[in-house]
Length: 300
Image 1 (spheres, rainbow, N blue to C red):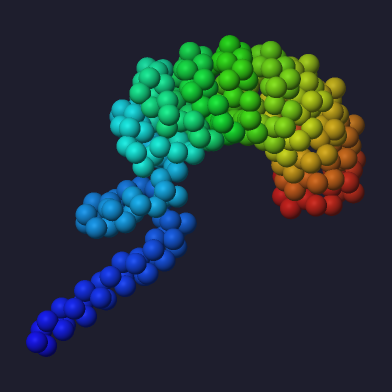
Image 2: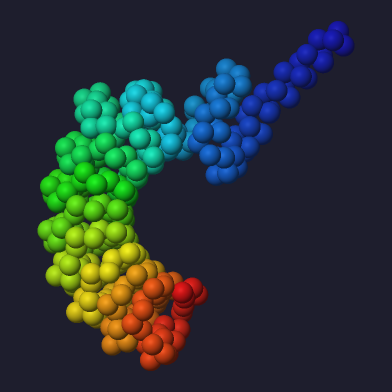
């Protein structure tokens, strides 16, 4: 009799653990563990597997950065029901990703990509303009797009992006060395709510293209022009139009003068400013920044 009572008590404790304690732990855990760790927990036990899978908020991200065979892994993951409403996919430096993988996604997993908001293709150097056409036509709700260090992408790829993805607010084109001013014209005309733009080492851009961005994308909060020595004060002066700008990287802006910097000093909300290797500026320009940018927390 005593043994049966103990079994009943143990069963009740397990039920309480399952219904009350575990959900609380899962809620805390979901904000602190990486997705890869959560996936590892699926293998602990069938019961934990069922519990984890029952929480949709845990399956909004697919993180395959630096993984081998990432293309096939991604297709396989998006075929699983729990990823039906994925919001973020990270393929950074998953270097085997090719256009054909993106074609497979469009063919087999179209429904799972309708809610995707963030796509990181940084370092995926096998992706071409065709790949951008495919994936952009598959993800209409995309808001964040990053394709750092891709020398195959041209203005044609950006044309596909602006045509298919109307809600981009964060765009990283760092190291896309074959982009021309036409890309900046397309971005300026279509993404006037853009908040973050990274053009690091896009070395073929000129004052004309940058000015179109500065005139039309007035919501910019972050602008990265690192290692771009070709721009002049003609463009730099128009940075003053960005009233909401908080982050500005002008490292290597060798043609920036005190006159241009005085205009930048009108950006009252600047928090971070990088002027490393801006060899023409003097005390005069720095004093203008000191007087005008009272919110600065970082200055190089």
